[in-house]
Length: 563
DNA sequence: AGTTTCGGCGCC
DNA sequence: AAAGGGCGCCGAAACT
Image 1 (cartoon, rainbow, N blue to C red):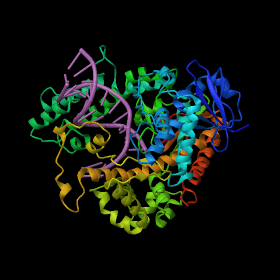
Image 2 (cartoon, rainbow, N blue to C red):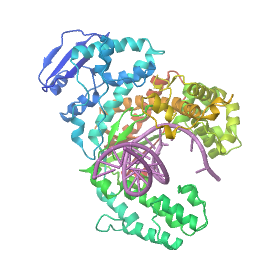
Image 3 (cartoon, rainbow, N blue to C red):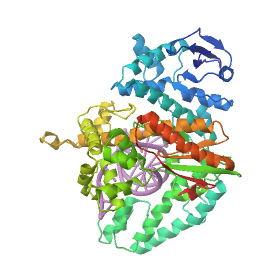
């Protein structure tokens, strides 16, 4: 039996299936069967299912209790391949890919659906345009050839496979949900905000703080209205450019303390308060929708619920089931370690080859001993910092780690010049990304002329335009953040496989941090599995490298206790 | 009245 | 002290 099969759900609930040969070409006839889940369940030896869209197929399989080992998502691969080919923005649907292959009119992509609180049913709605399996297989075969034509075919194949794996993880996490205690959440809210008043107005503590702010100014001020706050300070003889916290905090005025406190609590109230709880938590689980590869850098996003921005204080509500634990694992200094792996800078690889604190090591070697400064300088180099403290030490960084800094500098230059920039595995940055209006215009989005700003520097020799510099910073960060995302995809894939042999379930992922929910007696095995998965991901992603990817791990009953 | 943008801030 | 990367979310403000 072939280990690779393809399937395409049909309109009537049936399914088409076909065995594939090692070359990815059909190894048998397309068969028509009555039931999607049964078609997969009855073929336990299949190690990879090829399908149009994981979002279309996998939630339905999971609902029937069927999991798959691996998959290949044709439309996701199409997106990655188009990007690699410098064809960002072309329609990415399988139907569009087929039209390009056969030479017909290319249909535009269907519009994305919007997020709705708690709308589990949306996960089961058919998305996109279905294609007969015969046609899907033609697209798939062509994609195999397009992989071969990339700069590093082995890496590109790994990338599409890894992101498909990420989509399986995301679908499984969406099904599992994040263990969430509504009672604890309500306790936290009551502690911070006080009683709620009828009518949905501000809770007690916010009303009190608003009164304190008003008293300090000697007139009624709405602290949640920036314009009102600016006006109030102006009347007090203090001019401010914005009401951002750092700016407010530098002011000497009795309104500052209650105002800053108000802004902090207001944020909790509107973004993670009682109505959030009502919308997103049901049956002891917070159910956001994770989307693998939702950003150009490959980082995930979530749709609804702000799952990647859960405030620290609210994490007390993330509580394991009785007898279960949360294994919380954070990759230590992930981005500089990734920079070491991709730049192959000898000095940085040596530092990143240890599991000990990378910023402390950098500080010991390059500076006079301040870890905070070393961290600022390293992150500043990755982010393209243009001023501030980080810049002071950039020269030292450049001397000590020349290849690493040159790597991101080269990416920045490529970005400024509009050239393609890729992650280690081959995810490609759109040439105009980070350019603001330029990017919008190139994507076909009309830009109002009133906002166009003549870019006078453009004609001054030696100066890049504002937009070009923005592209440079974007590209500089892209190669590091994106390559880190490459590694985390492989990490998740490996961890998922390890968890498949246990009761443990992956429930949360946030850039460099995973949470596994498992029975207490599995916790130590999960910790070990995470470390092994990280090491395996490093080998697979970067090949032979001395760079290590250690984790800080904690086995806790409550997420807030992990730090 | 409905839709889009802005300001601010949460997370990494 | 406050500049540089990526996101999502909310209400208010600004728009049509």
